[in-house]
Amino acid sequence: VGSSPGDAELTPRQEQPAAEDAAFISIQAFPALLDLPQDLEVSKVSCGSRHTAIVTRGGELYTWGWGKYGQLGHGDSASSDHPRRVEYLAAEGLRAEEVVCGPWTTYVCVLE
Image (cartoon, rainbow, N blue to C red; front, top):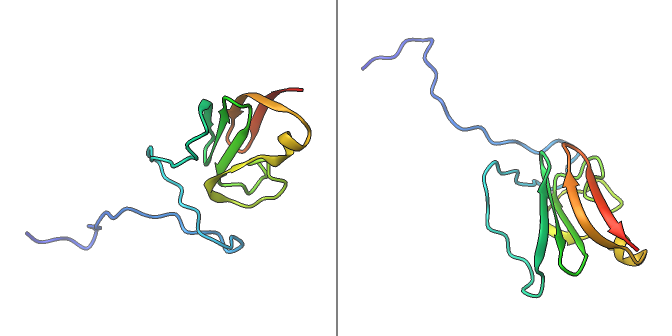
C-alpha cells in the first residue's frame, strides 16, 4: 500500500505547558481516579473546563487543575494536579455548601 504526499499520519497531540508555567499540569479529558484522605467524605463536585472542585460533608472546599485566573481560590494563579483545601474559607469561619465551576470561575455557596 502506497501513500500520497497529502496523506498524514494521525497522532494524538498532548497539550504543552505555557512558557510561564513552572510545572506541567496534566489536563485529562477523561475520568481519573483520585486519592483523597480517608476521612474526607465528598458531598458535592463540579468541573470547569480545566479545573475541579469538591465540597466535603464537613464544609471544606478542595480545588485542583488549571489556576491561571485564580479560579482555584488559593490567592494565586498556580495550577495543581493535587486537591488543595481552600484555606480562606476556614480562616473566615465559612462552611461551603455548594460549588459550581464555570469555564474560568468557581462559585461557592457558604454559610457562616
